[in-house]
Length: 129
Image 1 (tube, rainbow, N blue to C red):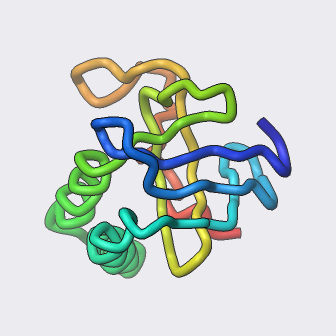
Image 2 (cartoon, helix red, strand yellow; image 1 turned 90 degrees about the horizontal axis):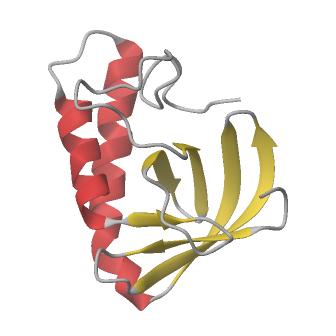
């Protein structure tokens, strides 16, 4: 699942929204060029809102706006790995034609984590280098 691998974004009905061509990685983050198709266009505002909310969190306390914004992302898309398998948990950001994400092969517990302290939303949720 390294460089050059192609991941994809699909809606919950399986409709292709975009391909993600991996260009770089800095564990646990992967970075890719986003190649959207027309069906992705209505989702741009959701990703833009998520980035705005994330940047507010980076600057100080948050009232839960980022979590609400990110839930809209998760409600809109499914991340598919290069083997064609839906990833159970992921944290994905999209800005312009760039995307970056981290993922877990296992679903988190209902309490919001799998107990190992490595949930995607913990720590540096931006993936900034």
